Image (cartoon, rainbow, N blue to C red; front, side, top):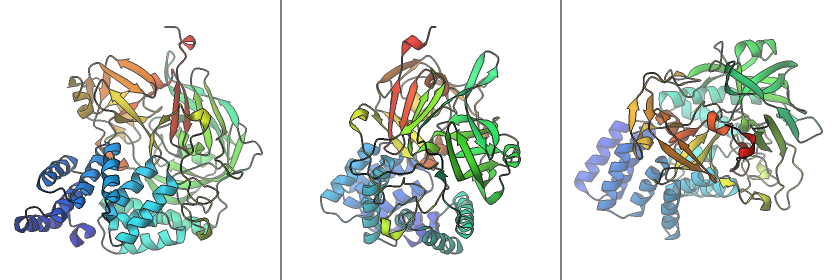
Length: 511
């Protein structure tokens, strides 16, 4: 376990195997091997070991580790049931509470998630994975201390995680030193409607829709992208708007060229429709374009609003979310994953804590509220800014597809496609994203997708490896619901409560 926590995974594997030789049914050894494989992103090996472990032992520790594999495979409901059963039978397995916290976070049950991670930390404060989740619930000053001490010592972060943690620490220090006021809405209205701008790949074909924004008085049309997070612009736009660097960061998305250098700046004024926000973080690519666009704006920045993307009428409508019972009036803000202002409380209100993951509430983190008129909305999972929609492919059990208006077409992972249809490599198809182009692209034959209360038949689908996205989210992402299909729909997203509604009116379309 000590080797695991220091990042010496091969050494940990060797020691765990030594234990298995002496005690062939050791739950600790099996659970340890499973977790090492998951940390190494070797999901198939972890799954195989979990099956072997269950055949040898039904111990609670083995079941908890097996559920961690299920969660990574996208079988979130199965994982949750396993963790719940272990907890309900009285076993004090800290990582069962950690797993439950992750499930509750993904379904916007933030208050419950906080209680689970607190309990996990009480049971095993030395578990590095539990500590990392627990620290994210603390005030900014405490997170700075944690990152400083962890980066200075031994840990089990891989090189990319260390670099990203270093950048994040730089950002937190800079925001603390600047003592900026948090990103906030300064206009008196709390709803707006604004046209979406057509972005063309040629005179006859749409590649997406842009959202008109004004950055420090400078007008831009940024691609409105439900698969992106926050606001990301190319350097030329940032320079014209007078946005200066406060800390370095990196950007990663679809593509095989890895991380791209970027920086975080603060925009003094940002206008969308009739709404104006001030003092908001924005990310800037060092390169001359962002996936061949001037920039992207993620729908998640409007976390405090009901986001209505009306593609048939080419409009974006932002309106107030239903108030929870007993909730006081809240001032909407513009959300960004790197925004850690003190208003973003993720712990008890008296602590003054803040966190990038959790929306503000009247008494710290709140659980999702499904208003009476939103009972028909589909329940989704949120992993960071990713909206993952349970989607059936043919008759196989539902998998998780990313709602992504920035992806041109519906896409699927080759492994998911092979469960229902034939897959072959196709050198004529090109897929590009923030991280460049994808080297190996496949074509999948006919597949029927069912999501929400809609069903769509796809004669052919683009397929490519989604492992990097799945590894980043910590659960299997089996495909994308892309623009060519989504543009037929009116999509309403409630990020606060992890809800989505899809509406299709055939009267809008004449084929």
